[in-house]
Amino acid sequence: MTLEAKYGVPTVAVHTDKFDKVVRSVAEVSGMPDLAQVFVPQPIMGKTPAQLRAYVDGTDPISGRHVMQEVIDGLTRPRDGGRGAGEYDRSTPRLVEPDSEENLHRLFLERNWTDTLPIVLPTEERVGAMLGGTRRKPDEIVGRMRSTHFREYWQYTVEKVAVNAVMAGARPEYFPVILALAATGVTARGSSSSAVAAMAVVNGPIRREIGMNAGTGAMGPYNHANAAIGRAYGLLSQNGQGGSVPGLSYMGNQGNNYAYNSVTFAENEERSPWEPFHVQHGLALSDSAVSVFSGVRSTAFTLGLREKHWREHVGHLLRGMDPHGPPALLLDPIAARQFVDRGGFTKKDALIDWLHDAARMRAGEYWDYQLIQNYIYPRATFGEEPWASKLKAAADEEIPMFRRDDIHVIVVGGETNGYWRIMGCNYQTTESVDAWR
Amino acid sequence: MSNMTVLDPTGYPPKISAKQLAPRLDTLNGRTVYLVDCRFDDSGLFLEQMRAWLAEHLPGVTTVLKPISSVYLVDDPKTWEEIRARGHAAILGVGH
Image 1 (cartoon, each protein chain N blue to C red):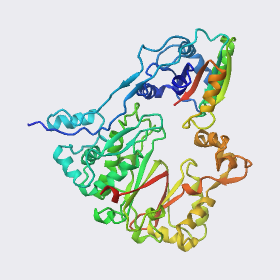
Image 2 (cartoon, rainbow over the protein chains, first blue to last red; image 1 turned 60 degrees about the vertical axis):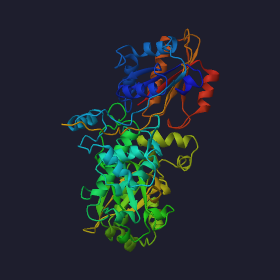
Image 3 (tube, each protein chain N blue to C red; image 1 turned 180 degrees about the horizontal axis):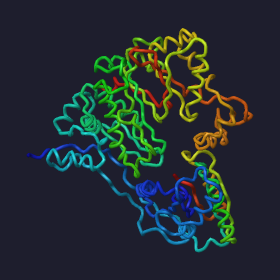
Image 4 (tube, chains in turn yellow, cyan; image 1 turned 45 degrees about the vertical axis):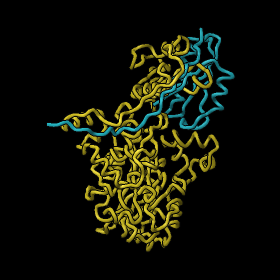
C-alpha cells in the first residue's frame, strides 16, 4: 500500500489464501479497496522449488484464475473504482437498539462481542455503577489498540472500558486495574497466526484491597478478581480494537486457552525473596501497578531444583523454549528460595544474569529456527544489535538464545509444593493502577 | 417481557482516508519489475519461481529480486525509493 499510495509504483501483493479476508479488510480500511491482491495456497514454508513453481503455474484458490495472469492484469489493467480522495466516517453508536434480554444476549454473541460465554448485559445502571470505581470522566480517552501491526488503531473511552468490565462480571473496585490494563494499549487479542495470549501481573496494595489471589490456585479459576479482571482485559481488547474474529481479525492457528483470562494474577510479594516486579520497573513498594506481557504461547515446567544437576535441568528447560519467545519464570516461593539456596541468587538480577548465560545453543541451530529466520535474521542482517554480532559466530559456537533484558522472574503460588514454570512471552510495560483510581 | 437498553462495547474507529492507486502500465514489455521478498516463511524461494516464470513467458521484462532491508514490520523507505527510481512495477510477497 505504501508503494502504491506514497511512491506511485503499481504493485501486486501476493498472499496465501487463508488470509484473503484479512488482507481485503485491511486494504478497505486503509482506503485502497481496489488494491491488486493475488492468492496462492498455504503454506509457502518448507515447500520444494517444484511445489512452489506449481503454485506459480496454478490458479488463485480464491478467484480460480491463473496466478500469473492475475499478476499481469494487476499491474496493467486499470483498477481504481473511481473513488476520489476524501474521508469516510465510521462512528459507532453509544447505545444498542433496545430489545429483550434474550435477544440482546443473542445479538452480543452474533456480533462477536463476547468470548462466547454468557456475559452481564451492560445496562446504563450497571455501567454507571462501574464508573463509580474511578474519578476519571466517562468520555476521557483511555488509549488505543489494534490487533496487529497492519491494522488501524481504534480508541476507547473510560465508559467503553466500563461497558466491557460490566460484561466480564467485574466489580467497581476492580475498575482501576482494568483501566490501567486498557491504558497500556497492549492488546490481549493479538491476531498473530502463532496464537498469542497476554499475561497480566498485579503488584502493590491493590492486590489485597480487591482480594486478588497470589497464592494457591492464583493462575486458575478460583478467585473472582483474578478471573474477572483478566476476562475484562480480553473483552476490552477485542471490542476496543474493533474485533477479534477468526479468519477476519484473528488468525491464531490453534487458538490459545490462556486468552480466556489473559493469565491474570497477583505477585506473591510477601513470600518472595526478591523485590516485587513493579519495583524492578521503577515504582515504589507502596504503589499499585499492573504489568503486561504479550506473545504468551509456550510453557515449560518442573519441580524444584535438585542439588546435583539443577543447572543442567534449568538449561534444558530454557533450550526447550522457542528462542523467539523469551522466558518469564513464574516461581512458587519454594522454588524461588531454592534458587537463592542453590545458586546464591540473593538478588533477582543475579538470577537473570545466570539464566541469560545458561540459555545457550549452537549458532547454526539458533539461526535455523523458523521464527528466528522470520523475525530476527532480517534484523541481524540490517545491523541491529545484539543480533548482528551473533551472526558472526561460527555454526558450532554456543550463543545466548535471548537478550538479557527480555528475561523476567515473578513469584506466584501457595507453597503446596515447589513446582514452577517458564512462560515464553514478551514484557511490554508496567502501568500505574493508582493513576486510574 | 420489557425491552432493555444497553451500551455498545466497541471502540471508536478512525476515519477512512481514500487513496488513489498508482497508474497502471500499458505493458510490462521493456519494463523493470521488482519482486520484493518480505522475508517471511521462505517467501524468497517462492519469488524465485515467479521470477523464473517471467523469464520464460515474458523475456522482455527485466526482473529484480529484492529482499526488504529488515523485518516486514519495519517500513523500508530505502527499498521503496530504489524501486521508484529504477523500477516500473512491484510484486510483493508473500503475505500471510
